[in-house]
Image 1 (cartoon, rainbow, N blue to C red):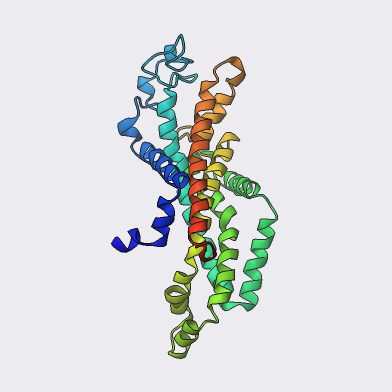
Image 2: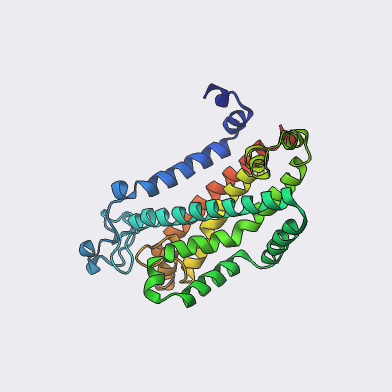
Length: 300
């Protein structure tokens, strides 16, 4: 632990107030989402506790506001603040899971392509090149559409969350694969890899034990930045109505619901979830920018 606090990364972190503020905001967002059942004023998805007479209440500081609903209520009488806290849980779950899936898939393919080379490299990189010609959101929509067409509606609703994670993860793996492939091409010709070959270590052991630890630096940076993109992708899919089911609404779903009432004067239903999404994505992006600079030896 002492070695970490004496490291260049910690020094860089403590010298940037923007990074420290971003880390604090990200921590508050994550903690608030994880502790939503304990901290949220209401359970917005408990149908027995909802009252239609509480619908469309403005924020508490407005003339007709209610102190029980700090950020107002939506069309069903759900507390907007509580809905944001619960919705952030779903957004973070999808974003983190999709990023881990894309990272695992991309790193595996990148290591194989870079170390084995030849036909394996050509095949995997051409698949990545083809996929990169399409926007990630279109790939995610295509995968979601294929699953919806292949499965009955009842089955799809049960696994909709996993389908969104799969769709976003598959759409993002080429970024990791190309980065890892480039680093692996450099590492595979270094002395420690040649020495491992000489003593008879197998390819898989060399890749996992020797090459992988030396290519993870750029992957961590891409993973942090990709987390923000995954959260935005999930919000976009949910806004379009093809994301998580209504029984597990995310921030994107809340924004879509509020958008129907934006021009009728109930602006708080969509504005506050939108602000929460912006704050979460911006804090993660700023942390990713700092991590990129901190791990770049040319900037030390």
